[in-house]
Image (cartoon, rainbow, N blue to C red; front, side, top):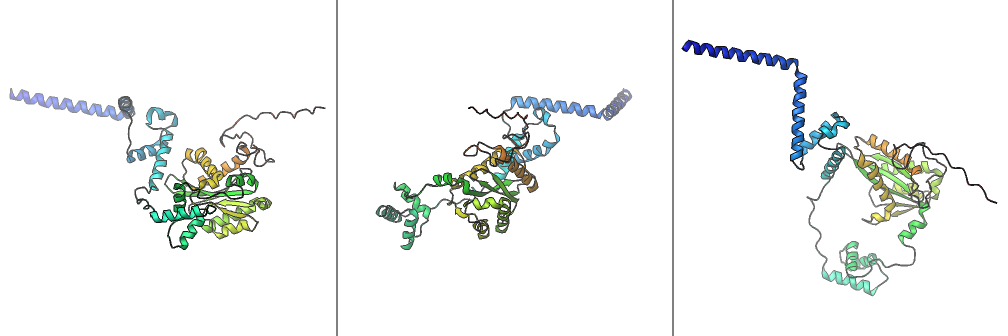
Length: 365
């Protein structure tokens, strides 16, 4: 009896080893089929989880892994396999760039309130001198030894119901921009964050009268010498048209040095610096920056400054001849330049069939 039980165990062990070896050979010769079956099981399990689970929250490691695998999956199969869309990847990149430059956690509490005696003195000076604005009142307070900022005087007068800047004879800023649009040139910087979170700066110029855009240059370190050189390049490209520009609007950034201003002042252009934290004084250039972000920069991921330079140059070549509605009188920036064939005003890469030009109207007697 003991011998029979031992022999049966040996037979069972031999049969198990033989079956295991056969299955190993089957899997070895049918490795692709097993992988396909495993992918089908995982895909079905993913479908079931999506059906029962609500919104999935991805950790930073998960986002980096999905972004790395995004280029390996065909775009037509993203809806079946990939859990996110291309727009989601762009949103993740914008949040990552914003988090890098976020200083809200290091921000200290605001300034203490102004001493009441100083506020009463500022209000008294304003009521006794109704033609003086907050700047002159700030000067009088400085003579009295009161250390206060001009913006604080503005807030004190505004809270007291007094106009911080009473109107005098002369046009408003809006009327000035409207009347001198043909002779105004505006300049500003915009920044772009690459995929590797490297910040690139783009210098843009725009003519108020025609809304023509000029790309000054693209660099990662905009120094004063570099900005002045871009101004010289623009002066050479404008040539005789530079003499018709009487005003240049810019902010108070340290990149706009005296050498930059001298390039335009040599042609008789007057430099107008905007007030601190007053983007509306350069509203047309700010609108141009917003348009570049909405229509170009927010739709692509920039790899390097060379790619960003090509995209801005392409947009600059398209914008002057395609955007007629931006001109105050609905004229193209350059009437003698015709738009490229097949190019529309919606996007630089859109194509449209060319319509025949209608014949001119017949002259009536």
